[in-house]
Image (cartoon, rainbow, N blue to C red; front, side, top):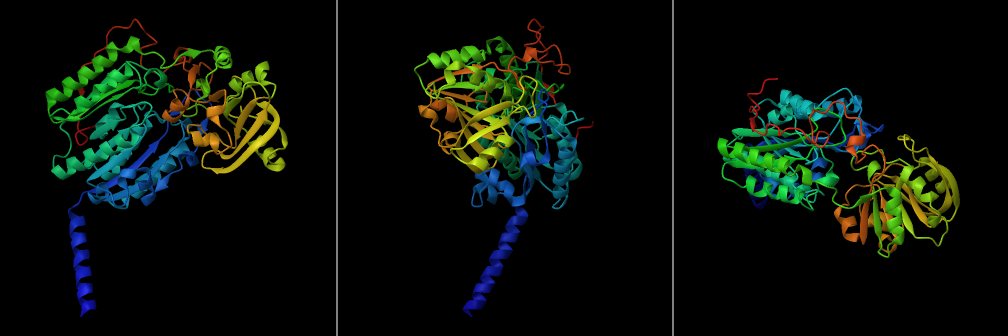
Length: 518
């Protein structure tokens, strides 16, 4: 009898769960994220996205763990989500493969009430303008026009008219560095759930304003003004009655495409509040345009090294900005490393200690694995992808450390050359965390100079630095935008045309997704 009672209770519980599930919204998850520099000779293949599929996708989002409130508020259908380290243009084959698989997975569980579209917004694809706009259009063709799509983006992404039209809800980060990335993604999910649960559905109005400004992130960080003050305006704007969300996109500065420029978008149900808020934010951005400067001192590499050598503060950090792999650089430009090794100060072991992070060199990695720690190696590194500024370097030094298994670098080798510790990797890797160094037996806090391929310092490096300068070095993400050959961006554009007339910053109401006709 006890067993029968247990089975009846279990069946009743299962039936109740099924009934509850039937009342919950059905929501899919999909997205691809990368920044692609069209000024880099690098090419991004499919494996760079390290795509997660099915329930693996939840691992991207701590707020979606199995026992979370968000998981219990819907029946979820994660499809495919990929995230690549910034790099060069994506091959068409890679794009079509990943998008095609996503669409196939979406077809398996139709229909959907909502879809969480998690992208960066700065992907470039061979032979295709506006990949994210193309991607969401193709998603619409599968899921239909009634499904609510909530789009989450990086503030360095680009919002085309097509992307804005097919998105019902849209938001982006409000901090650079992106300390609020997960908070922003959760906001995109929460907005979607709230609109579905309340029965409000799609916001009635979407105001879109292109702002003809194209600036690098190193000039628009929210750590300092005017970026800090500008983005501080977004929070109260988004909390207004009648507004669902408000966002400012700086845009991506290293792709030569018509969609690359700043954008303001506000969504909500009160037309006047939505449009007036968008116009106020756009005008604020435009009015501040001349105040945007690099968020740290900048100098030539020679001047940067001179300052670092003379400094008694350590670590003195130098950003090797032109080849920053987290902005889209190839990561293997040897120009900076060549200049460092040529300096007499670093040629003796008792010279100023310097860590260089990093340079790809699979040939040297293989040689190091053969001789082991303590062995001598001589092999070429770098410039396999981007040799426009400097050819490969032949490193001759002592192997100080070998680590295998890193998800990006695969194998890391530290080679001592004079007083310089060069981190050589099988594949490119950004070095953003203290553990990236300490895992290799390096102590950046006690090192005189740390040179990192990066732009503005991420929080962990920023908090570690004793002093810091950003070096204006060459590469695929050259910070001197006017030195690059832009041919396809819309003109006039600030700062390329500093004397341009004030643009039309009136809000343009985007058609709702079920009304949009291309």
